[in-house]
Length: 200
Ligand code: ADP
Ligand code: MG
Image (cartoon, rainbow, N blue to C red; front, side):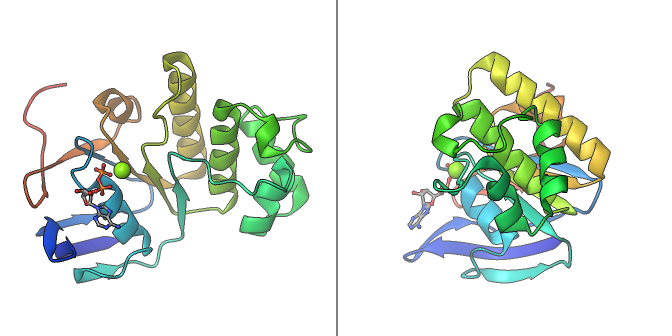
């Protein structure tokens, strides 16, 4: 997919652009930047969730999204949280649950799962949609360091296994490096993209 963003404004205040980026299946791109710089705004535009911008977005890739909040269906069990949104058959959904370490939790409701387990369920749901590109918005934030590291490793394994590409927005450079991402930094007012200056 390719984005040529001339500008994105909220209520007359330009927060992003001009900037351009492209990413495709098998590529991994991380967009780094501090809180409030416009990372989520950029990811929502990339995802096609926000069409209110000046510029052009092109791409026929299948996308799956992972947000900081797992955004699960509260009254549906773990299995249905995969089958309903993705249309994936129950046997495949079971396999995905096993892949993320949730075998045996098929009938658990989201509230019966820890935050780390809910995040892994959201990850299983994303891959069950068989995406060409996974778009992740701070998916490892507010997990304890050990859980976050395990989830980073799991994400890397699933990406490698599926061949999907990745756009990761985060303020954590170590996560981006652990996932072998090409780095771009979002900075300025309005924010633009540039290669990182400091070495890792
Ligand atoms: P980040 O994800 O990097 O923390 P955001 O993309 O959420 O940053 O926000 C970038 C800027 O745009 C911030 O100044 C934020 O207050 C503003 N903003 C985000 N969403 C909206 C919105 N729906 N309406 C108005 N301003 C917004
Ligand atoms: Mg954000």
